[in-house]
Image 1: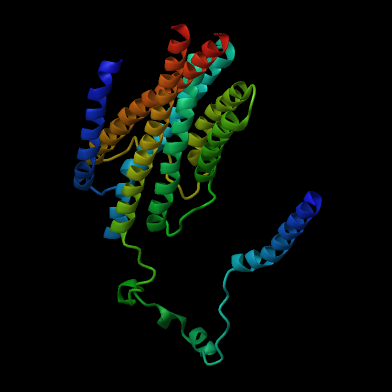
Image 2: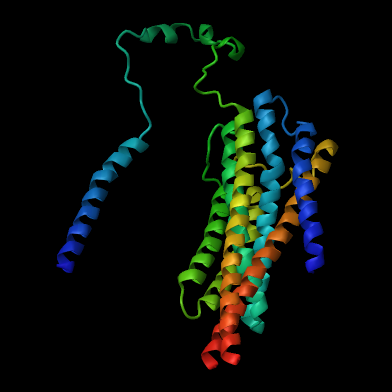
Length: 225
Length: 113
């Protein structure tokens, strides 16, 4: 596992260095009859959507690991869930900030209380609450936060389909499957970059939780002696 | 004494809320322009077909134009900033824990010896 870490770091760095060049060369054919300014703002799409995908992935990892911790009482799963929950908040923050920046140019407003935007904000807040409960909840906070994470994960499919059920200003889920061939390669390259980065950050953050568990164990040993 | 300071705090919070509420409410109201007495009110109604102006001939309002390049670069810089700050915080927490482990292991080693 450790031997994979350095190549993965180098790969992620290389991918993030190459991404802007691929992005600038990508065709702007997402919308017809748009002004050059609006077309340029669509470049945000290449890192806004992958961030959202990684946010969903992270919520799933957190939810599944929390369920394993709740039903099997495995501490390693709880540590993984804590790491993933923090990444939901980090990537969620990227989604919730880059989205409005793009919206200001494309829609003319920073924010709309439409189903997708509001449910994404709620999802982000659930995982923010997870971290707060874990930090300040005291005894038994791990179990309580794990239950919250399971509900947070259950919220993800609703966030995804919200744009198809309640039609508002946000594009539907049909945008990605119908991407133009020139855009598809660049888009999936960006998604892969974000997934590699997610894997690295998850491993790094899970290691922190592992070391914290080691500290707890050492304190117990010191108390016994 | 503590009780009175708490009541003073509560009173100031309620007073601030009462003061800020109407101000926030007024700020949320859409600005309705006052009718200008010199505006020719009847003129627009006389010949509405003459009011059309092609968008290309309108003067560009600089205050309403948001440069897309700034937005794209701003969003990209934000992604980098968030990720770098996050890695830095994890790194710092990891260093702190490693230091604690070394100190504890040293203490346990001393006791064992």
